[in-house]
Image 1 (cartoon, rainbow, N blue to C red):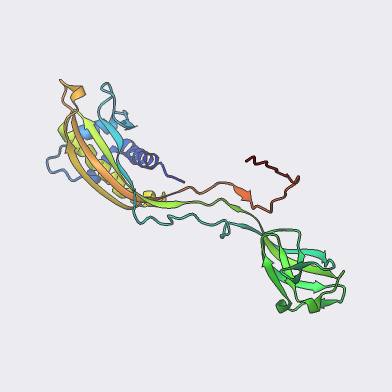
Image 2 (cartoon, rainbow, N blue to C red):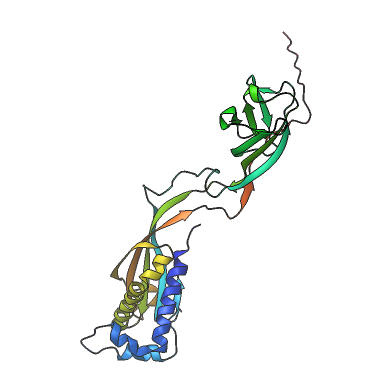
Length: 287
């Protein structure tokens, strides 16, 4: 599956800022401000107006201040984890164990010139035991061999079987399995921008964002975003707001994560191919 990182980031930021709306004075323990300029930030948090958190660029009429989530870069890593498809026969395959079946050895039945029997279920995984109930003997494992697992062919030592003997076979087989899935590694870089019409407020909200993501790093790690790294820079003013002046600062959030095509359903394994009606083709070549 592919994570929508904007969901994780916006959810975390909203949860962290909700704490501040509930107890605005917490900013005094989060930000070190020598000039005591937190009064406007406290007034904003106490006003009851929540700062919008949007995906993408805001429209010119958007309310300020605003926090914007934007993708800066999204790259597949050269050395991804599991770049190749997994096979169906993996730990996710559904295996039926201990299936027991009575099979009668048919006269003259041979596979590659060796006597054989065929069990009803294909894709045999292993054979637990074979008992010749006609002679009341349990066959030694060296006396039989899983010759072809897909159709369920089991070859037998000619000395342990006679025409018409009934054999009780206990075996495991694979009933179904997950479709192959691909897993790769991605690295993504997001810009989380703060827009406001006050330079000091923009800086303070930027640093609150930094606190929110550092404090919530373990939460994002639990969401599958690892090797997180933060950065930041000022941005040019937004021209669509002129003549008003809009201050912008971006916090960059870089992380790595796994993306996969893991299926949600299982599919039955192919059990064989049967041709119902033979078709004869004829051709005439004129010279």
